[in-house]
Length: 356
Image (tube, rainbow, N blue to C red; front, side, top):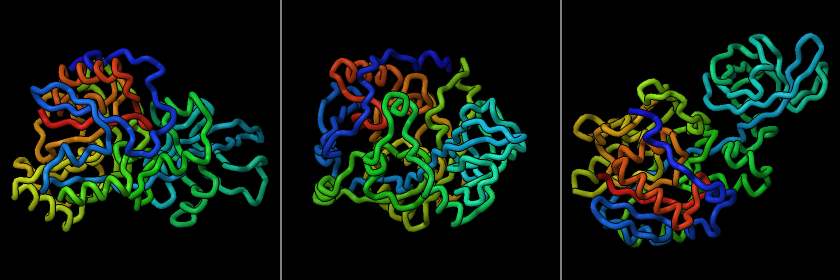
């Protein structure tokens, strides 16, 4: 499909730079096939679901994956930053570098270090490979838990570029840009639909008879990359690692068998569920990388309802919601949201989409 079909004009002041407080005070646009749009709030979510429905959350935890440092070559230094986006093995990460033109294969990079001979440098590594679009592979001098600890010590929360470009990061971001149920370290971007949930909202869902289930997809920075190709068929998705265990699979298959609906909280949970579903919608345990790219025409296998935020024009995420509810429907829904001053993107408001 032509990429320009997924373009739309978004006023700059609709981009949320701070989250709603409390989290479930965010607004929520309810989109159901053949029915008028309904303006609500996230705290009302339980009223739009049925007893026996199952909500699926992504329990990944965002790590401080934005690293600032210096490239050292022939005794000269240049400031560079890396946004880690996918772990390759115990000591190697794929990352987006800025400015990438300052890096070459074999360069040494030191983070939190001002001199090349500084013995107590917090972290250092070598550029092992350089790809397209600013991507590099960095081989750190340490690995495993020691590397994790070093990244946690010197890294910064990787705010989305459309927020980071408009304001500096602050201490509150480390709390705001993390779900209350985050459990497994590895993401470099938050599963933002989950940022709306509170203990009070969980209690309301419990009282309604709606079950909660957790899967893991370590969200990569590739989620923010625009689709530059003129045709969606030419776009290559970045791989992200995910897992659905056997117990969760059994529970969700039982829900579907009883006639309950599967509610994916966020596009990351949906992509993982759809990757693990067979042709008839039955889930199988899953562990590994997924690069599933969902565009209009895709036949959804197991997800019935999607809760998600409002996404970037021309993004793979807007293409996904257009596939889920219909391109015309979602273009109209986004126009409605812009007119009603809904807040967009990671810290913005939510949509509740019933599959078209």
